[in-house]
Amino acid sequence: MPAILAIESSCDETSASVCVDGAILSNVIANQTIHEAYGGVVPELASRVHQQNIVPAVQQALLNAKVSKNDIDAVAFTRGPGLLGSLLVGVSFAKAFALAKQLPLIEVNHMQAHILAHFIAEKKPSFPFICLTVSGGHTQIVLVKDYFDMEVIGQTLDDAAGEAMDKTSKILGLPYPGGPLIDKNARNGNPDAYKFPEPQIPGFDFSFSGLKTSILYFIRDNVAANPNFIQENMNDICASVEKRIATILINKLKKAAYEYGIKDVALAGGVSANTGLRNLLTETGAQNGWNVFIPKFEYCTDNAAMIAIAGYHKYLKGEFIGQDVAPLARMPF
Ligand code: KG4
Ligand code: ZN
Image 1 (tube, rainbow, N blue to C red):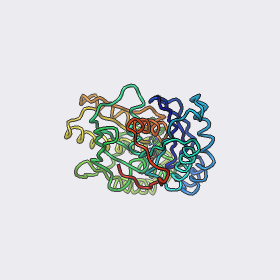
Image 2 (image 1 turned 135 degrees about the vertical axis):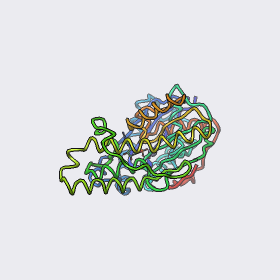
Image 3 (image 1 turned 180 degrees about the horizontal axis):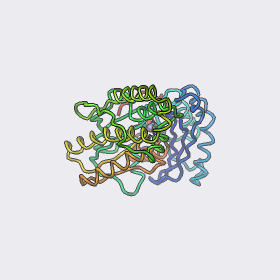
Image 4 (image 1 turned 90 degrees about the vertical axis):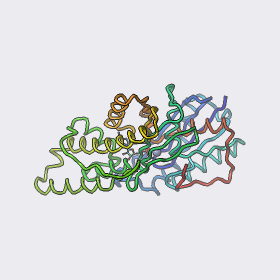
């Protein structure tokens, strides 16, 4: 019955979770609003806010789970990938807690954890499955052969899908992070109002930089003709951009599932909170006879519950790491 305390601090969410015997008992997420004014995450500020939030987040996670810090058996933490200064706060906290309590440490890869979040739910995918992982920093199609045996079979050659959402919202004058606002506006818009190009990239890779440029020129030309173009057409623009990003992602996913002959298909990462993407995946899954796995909203964006479930499976394998561990800004599978 291992009780695991998990810490996530790779970007701008400070999160702590307690998991007992594979069941998530708490998942506390402290969001950082300080970055809104800057139109993106400011790494130095993120580290400072993590520093302020980490102890209260852990205390709250223990309290919500009704687990005493004396009953924790291991500490799992995000080692990378992410912002180095942000990771340092979580890694240092995890090491200090483990040292004080004489506990083993478990390192977790953030991108693997997004995928392993599917093992929190009762309905779990079977190996091998394919996962489309879409976040602010990554866009990957991953062949998941086992808990920690994953192969990236496709990825973005430039911007990530979340970055494409966030950059579009910036062009539209919306605050950061733009993805959720594009989603909200798109719900009242016509997704077929405007057509944006679909890049022709071979294999399972993606590219979003051309799309970003075409959106930029489209807005610039229309605003030159009508200064109120954005305000008058905001919902239609958001719906059309969202549809294009979702179709680019799902078309590649379809190709991968078909070529690998896989029917269990999952979605993960912050952009998996997007309504248009979730709906298109559900629809495509029904047409192709897939078993579709879409995480609950609280497990889509960054959270420590996914670190806890990944940590639990590493605990079962007896995979621990020493106190000399350091964070990794880049951390391949
Ligand atoms: O996984 P995540 O929380 O952090 C990273 O590891 O990057 O992903 C954050 C990304 C941001 O780009 C954000 O705009 C996007 O996920 N996002 C969304 C939605 N919610 C978050 N994009 C579209 N629709 C949403 N509802
Ligand atoms: Zn993430």
